[in-house]
Amino acid sequence: MEIRPHRVIKRKITKKIKVGNVSIGGDSKISVQSMTNTLTTDIKGTIKQIKSLEEAGADIVRVSCPDEESTKALKKIIKEVKVPIVADIHFHYKRAIEAAEMGASCLRINPGNIGSNQRVLEVIKAAKSNDCAIRIGVNAGSLDKKLLEKYKEPCPEALVESARHNIKLLEDNDFFNFKISVKSSDIFLTVKAYQQLSETCDYPLHLGVTEAGGLFTGSIKSSIGIGQLLMDGIGDTIRVSLSSDPIDEIKAGYEILKSLGIRSRGVNIISCPSCARQAFPVIETVKLLEEKLAHIKKPINISIIGCVVNGPGEAAQTEIGLTGGGQNNNLLYLSGVPHTKVPNSKIIDKIVKLVEDKTKNIN
Image (cartoon, rainbow, N blue to C red; front, side, top):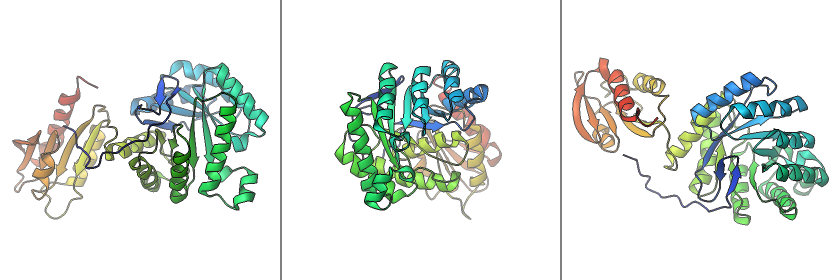
């Protein structure tokens, strides 16, 4: 049973590109990305983190390549992981060339940081020769000096002009396997820049609010910015940038997509905030269920409601529902139908077993 959003999002159809074995744009699913925070030269540590991100649902993982030793490490790392690897390049165009040669599926470059057009052209040549995609990464914090002089400050028009300049540079050199981002830490600037860019090109867009902050504040800022764009049908791949464990970025990304009915993974818990009417400790129950069901990959909706005010109605929309009842007499629903009564002490074990039974053959 799927929860159907009241609004059907009409997504803008963009060009389809390939990042390794992952399609981005066109009718492809919206992919979820993150980035490692290990030293890339720590090959074992980086592989371990990438595999953890794969398990969490990452479709693509970005790896920083600040020096030659890091780009050389890519070759061994890529052999040991399944997801496409994006090499994150800043300042040193030679690192981009090396990363392409080492097997990176995509190069993330900020052309404003790479240097002259000739250097960008050398990067394009390396990408072509190694079947490597490119992400044009325009960032409000690192705009070209000429644009800052023209516009006086970072603004949507400056970000879009930078993107358009680099789009033309790639197109003029017969390179089309690229996606674009125009990020800022300011939500309003980010949203307006993506909206303007979407009106002027049909290349796939990588969404994100850059440097959004910690887990709590960053997730909120990203949800507002990314969510608004997705609701407008804009965006083909997302990264939630958090000062937190990279796995949290993947979780937050899927929560944004799940909330909009775009893509589902794992358990979606609908729960009340709890109040004096609650017949069992809702907050503690939901927290334990989230922990014990974190390994579930198949989409499944469950509702945990502390009383009968909204409980039966929510249970009617989910595969598994629990509604609090008086005198330790909670009612369990299966696919909207009352099934059995469950005492407080048995709630966690009962629901965990039901979820695992429903998903064990599909994970």
